[in-house]
Image (cartoon, rainbow, N blue to C red; front, side, top):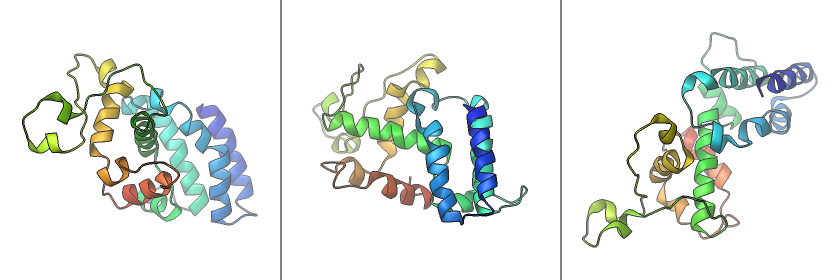
Length: 184
């Protein structure tokens, strides 16, 4: 995957002379973003070390698009370009998977229990629509979509979780705005 992203970075570098940054963002979404987004629900919840090469290539793409020198911080440029970093892409696609489950579009092979369904007495967390996170013994289980997705879902704002359909909600743009303002 990183070799394919590197080849596409070369294309963006060559196009930099001819296109403005907003057009380069479109090229980024057509050449690099699909590799970052495809099946990231499975491979994206992982230790940081296996993902560093991909993260560095994504940072390099943002630096090329926005003409950022190597030693300058890159995070403000992600916000300016309205791009998501790799951990945010993983978190968003995991939450979209859970959103589709709760709205009946997908049926996962794991069980999801709301905290309000766990017991009958009233607590602060029972009033919210948080998912119950089972205990786990190994990190392999911790990085699985069924566990890490519950963490992501519980911290995602309830105003987005409770929307009736994705057609009424531009989830991607709202999530970008929330992530860029550090609300999530």
